[in-house]
Length: 199
Image 1 (cartoon, one colour):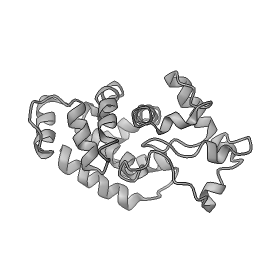
Image 2 (cartoon, helix red, strand yellow):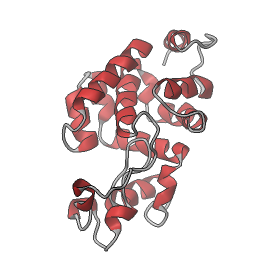
Image 3 (cartoon, helix red, strand yellow):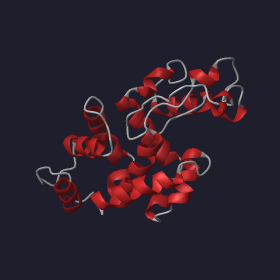
Image 4 (spheres, helix red, strand yellow):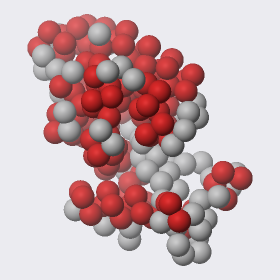
């Protein structure tokens, strides 16, 4: 994000326009998308590091797509852990080989967590190993906003979503995040909101 990009975002968020997109700027951005006062500062702190590390904040359009997807997945950053019914879809997590859920109770244990709603034993293992944190043994830590955001950024990079964001391809990004087009209309609405702030 250039100094001008940061100043534009800060102005639209009603912040002092110093041109440095740091934790306070990101805290305000997450709050604008619905993050509670107890969650927004932690997301902002993590974002100030990881959005740059993973190249998401390099371009406003990338950040807009990222915000749209994670805002949808987390219900406006209100839910760092999937609400469990269980619904029919959640019951289908149990024993689902593609998710790596091989042991009884894995469906619930490895339910969606973090802003991207990381789901399934295999994903917890894969992302935990990549980040040097044992998510498989301690899945609950992915629900910590700062850790969950780091996992979401890593997910974004591993799925090649920066390039798709550069092409403004919300449909393919949605399929790679969700496995289908669930919630596409809301994702598009969140993207329009993000673009108004960032572009």
